Image 1 (cartoon, rainbow, N blue to C red):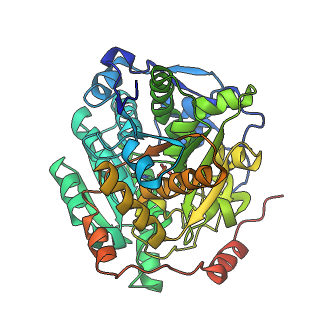
Image 2 (image 1 turned 120 degrees about the vertical axis):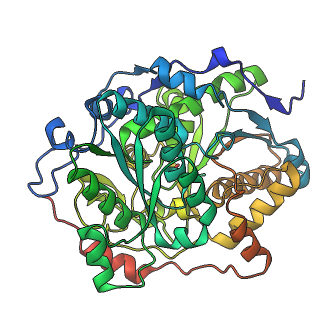
Image 3 (image 1 turned 180 degrees about the horizontal axis):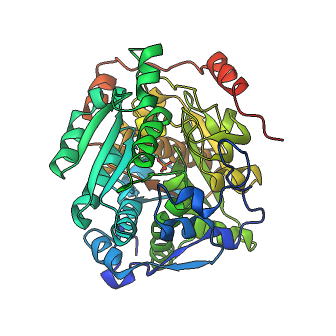
Length: 451
Ligand SMILES: *Cc1c(COP(=O)(O)O)cnc(C)c1O
């Protein structure tokens, strides 16, 4: 049957996360202490993370049990639906089959709840009272605020200034779930004040907001830090997406030729693709494509080396593709993709040729989002629309080549709180930012040298 929607039962929610560190051909180099440049130990991280998450950060166990308390919350919206994009296929007149896994059904509107829920659970279990975190477009802040409400944790969010001003409804959602939200750079931390002194009009960046949140957590004993992407345990939690997708495609009688996801720090990409990369590592033919903005082209134009995760240099050094920790990307509308680097796992897998990367400009991405909305109904998040643009291009290529092909992309979130960006696009007010080559070159020249 030519199904449109494949929905699993509550009993089909995965009960274990998949850890790709059990199978990847080369493990990422270890994180290094920001001052000594020696590998960090669990004790270095214990000031800001609970031990359960530190263990998940380093373990090479293939399967990690999902706690029942987490499954109970996942069940509010998981399993998420898989759709066959029949109408989009028709609009493109392509012989390719296009599927999308829809993570926008979570109450916070994106895939980020897949990790905010377990992070809140493990912190609560460890006796933590408050979480300090950062947010770009507001998706992670919303997911963490929701998780804080479920598990009785206070949440303080440092929100990148450009998004704080562009996306007031995300801030209001966070506040509705009980969080306190500050525009970053703020006057509340040394890191924030240092930036404001140099540039009072700084639009902010994820790197700056991370410095503020880490500083807040490190200087309060009852407070931990939580990160919405990049780290190994975050990508681990996101594998519920790919594990469900595998079952759904089995029901549809299909297997993907190409899996596509937008890539900011790499968490929805890792989540949707790692269970399939297991197959690829074991000989199966499947391509994985990471899609990023031309204005923040980490995988396509960055360097693979050690860098800080934040602007102030408070976090451990991670081995990853980076544009430089103090590079401030232009204020594009896909705020969730404005991170200067990528997850170590995704970086290593890209370096080893298991993941491909591609970059697009924001106007072509919005055009793709419009075609998708008119065909499939859902208005996608600007971040997710990068994956849509790539899926459309691949479907058109299949048409040109006269080949059938199964293309699956992750629709990481909805765009109903991003409508101001759509208004700007419809009014012709969105333009493409040129690739900031000089600024990136400068930022890369300031990277720490590791011998
Ligand atoms: C945060 C976000 C992204 C980018 O983050 P990743 O960690 O790369 O997944 C993509 N899409 C949406 C909807 C987001 O909220």
